[in-house]
Image 1 (cartoon, rainbow, N blue to C red):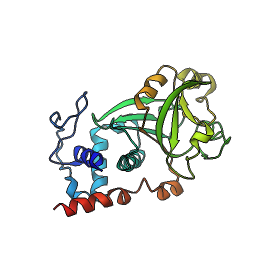
Image 2: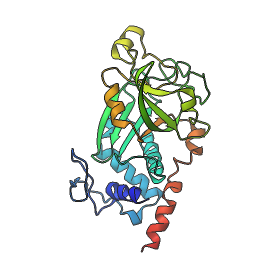
Image 3: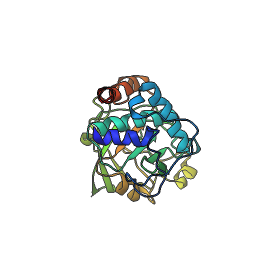
Image 4: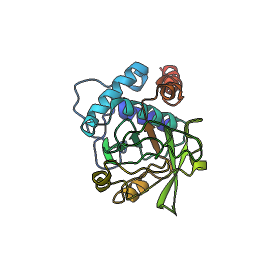
Amino acid sequence: MEQLSSLLLLLFSSHLPLAVTDNALTNDRVAVIHHSETIPALKDLNPTTFMDSMSRLYDVMDLQKYELSFDAFKYGMTGYLSLLREGKLNNKGLLTIIDFTKSSNSKRFYTLDLINLAVKFHTYVSHGKNTGEVMAKSFSNTVHSNQSSLGLYVTGETYVGSKGYSLKLDGMEKGYNDKIRERAVVMHNAEYVSEHWIRKYGRLGRSQGCPALPNEIGKKVIDTIKNHTVIFAYYDDTAYLSSSPYLNPENLFAPIFASSQAGN
């Protein structure tokens, strides 16, 4: 809870400015963001002011320039903070979003640095061959489905296997992606994730459900996000978005609000 509260203060407090340095943030090294609107202090946060702050953070990070949808960002941030509260993430402040509402022929993989408020990676990523052609349409948690899975994953350990240097993943969402390990869905490089492949075949290549990355950047991404950072595979699936316990800000902030009120 202490780590989560510190991050919330960092992101949303009007008393601590947001960080825009290239180095890791410390308590005595922050840079001021010149913003005309007041960001609410932690004690003033509620689901409404949280979403207002999400909108400001989205603007500050200039995510529209990268064509990351606000919905994918706000759900990803809520999921990130929920998992951070549960102690499932490291302290790197990294949130990776795969926006499966976008064409596979566009860059839909984003790694956000929430400490330095920067987009660390923006690249292509595959979906499963039974998830769709150019567009992702169907998702599964079933073994041998050859489909991608929705929801929040936490990154695990690296290894060298049949696909080369790879990253194991753990699905956090029961019924949606909790069989990722059993399915051997991992992150790896692939030659079919490239602009050359798109030019030749009219679409990005597809995997057996793995989020495969371009050869030239895959290892760097894996080494950056390995060992307990979050990946959010987003799609505008109403049933999933409304049922996930990690994506509801009221569930996220209830204990924090109670703690803040008790301290006043």
